[in-house]
Image (cartoon, rainbow, N blue to C red; front, side, top):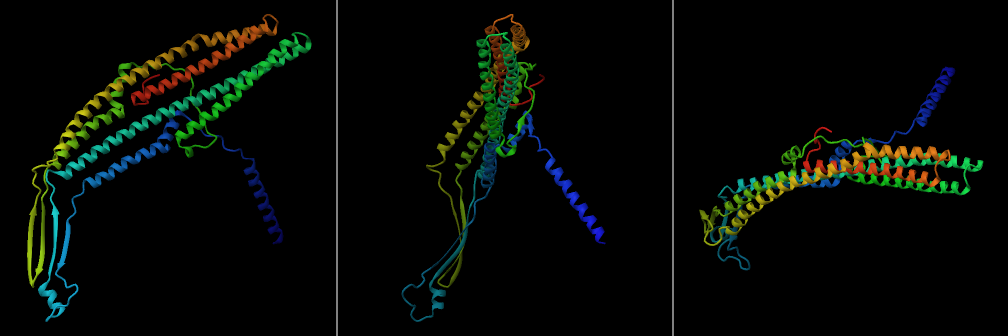
Length: 430
């Protein structure tokens, strides 16, 4: 029995050690990598500014409840001629209260004319529809901000990769130069000129690291700070791809999709609702009341009817104001429609220009800069060209590579601008 217990205990210890070893040996989970679509989805779900804006829809829906309520009936009562400082002479208190005081109790109710409640409700629902479209427009703005920051993060990643590759490549040049200097192939001055250039490559790497951290931090703020881990990263194609779509197609799509234009259209409906409500408020509302009275030992009932006489105030000012507001809303709708077409035109032309610049680098200058550097490096290592010529070719290559990445980032940002202008992320085939 003791042997079996000892065996079980040893097995348990070995199992614990195995589990612990697995736990300690297990690698930490890799950082989350998110695409542009993931980033926009996270922002729409977790961006706190956007979440705060969405509460305005709920506030307006609560206002709809208030607008659809009927007036409350009013209850009133009184008891008059109660003895205060003197005692009734010759009769009991109960007899005095029964025969010499007066008590009243009744109800009154305001009857709304002109379909006021229905008009209030329609106006409140129209205001909610406008607010909903405005919040959707806020979502459009957030998607553009996320897209732009995502491109910035991609540019920072690509720039860092370029800086690290250039540093590694130039470090080999420095190592070769050191060997040549020790063998007497180059002068000490040439070697020092090569070596001092290394600090620029190291500085580029450090700056690229800072830019990457800052770009990811700015993007994380838009995504909702707690929605992604601190060590997250972005992933996606960072390359120029021409967009095969015409401006007429984009403008037609924008007129259908832009939420700010839809808000302007709904604003006309809301203005008409306010005008109808103002006219309904010009109708005078009667009040009816009924009460029971007990006075001097006699019980009785009273019915009354009252209504304001619309001699002076017939809500003329509000009616005129809301009528003019309809014209204002119509003009704002026309302005919004023109702004949509202008936004698409400007964004389309900006995208086309950025695309042409990126295409210039991709079709020719990248290859030219690469060949120039490779030839200069090969020739310099064999003593065929001067050091300054080689360093100049190296600088030109770095500048061209960086300019191409910036051109791609400008193109992708312009593409995000165009998506915002159209109000739809699906622009067509790329």
